[in-house]
Length: 154
Figure 1 (cartoon, rainbow, N blue to C red):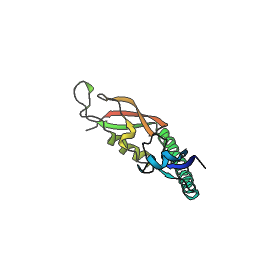
Figure 2 (cartoon, helix red, strand yellow):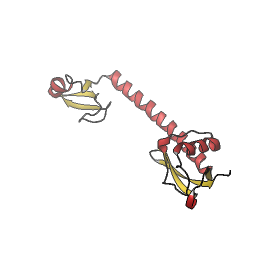
Figure 3 (cartoon, one colour):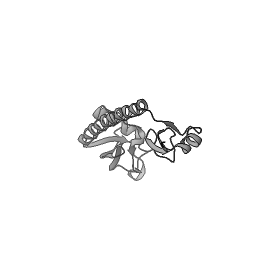
Figure 4 (cartoon, rainbow, N blue to C red):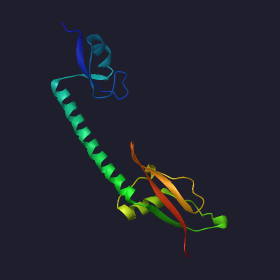
């Protein structure tokens, strides 16, 4: 008689491993603890085939997203610098602060692509000048764009 059984892990934060992976475990452990607590389900050929199909779809989508993000990076690298005009106060300091939305508007004008506020990391800007801003497109795809702050013309 078999002493182990193939199961699929269903619970997200399981101590057995990542979700939707198969594992061979002891019969008693599976039927007395894991199945009643809805942590695993018994793996059939159809379920394994379904999980593999979902993994393939997910990996293809990840490749497509990666290529789109690489294209976005090349578009951003073509920009020499982004110019933003601000009112000047005393000691050549600007009024207010530079926001991510102002940078996003300029990027849309230059590339036609939209970014999220969370992707842009701005330094603390208080004076006119040229600054480097880091744009994080994806976890492992970053680029640096020059930001030039100019005095507004009245």
